[in-house]
Length: 261
Image 1 (tube, rainbow, N blue to C red):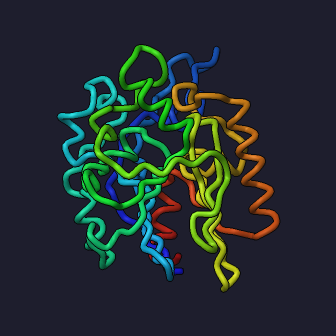
Image 2 (image 1 turned 135 degrees about the vertical axis):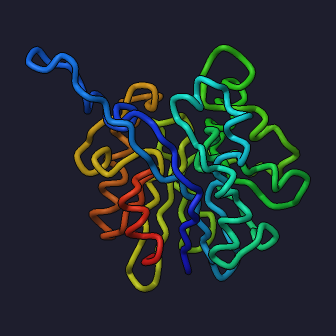
């Protein structure tokens, strides 16, 4: 299986969202300087012998105009239009029409904004049941989370609902990793060359979330106990398989892996 990381640009945000209380006032330094940094946005193409799989569809290219203003203010994706899905796919030799399967790790606006490409098609879109329920609840009521836009996912899509861990294709196992969102999906990609890949995605915004157990900011964690259980689940998989673990938005890792997977 060939794996290609797609460059979908960068989101700019306060580091405290990614690493809880990374910059905090203390008695001796009551006015610390905040850190406003850039984070990678990526998708993935998995070229499997039986199907070409697209992992996530990224931000809507018109993010600045379609995202709620407070969310764009907090998580500015200013280059979304320069890194739209069609451009990102073309950069690694694919087109939207080459995609046989879409997997949505979750339906937050920086991950589901390209689903309109598959409106009215027979391309199956895999999503966890809890995620689909929570996304519609969040987008249409005052309950749930604020990172869901009905306009991202309320299309004529061939939803394939996942209920737990399950095999997608031989060698590709979907993993339910609740915590960041109720229905977050990751994956264990088993490759014959023994260089397995674990997609942690937004279970870990940055490397320290996974490697050191540093929680993300409270606005990025739906359920902190579930988040820690999911982290332990991935750690056990990593221990047994020595897989490369891919984080959700780590810019250093993205640059390191984009040409080496």
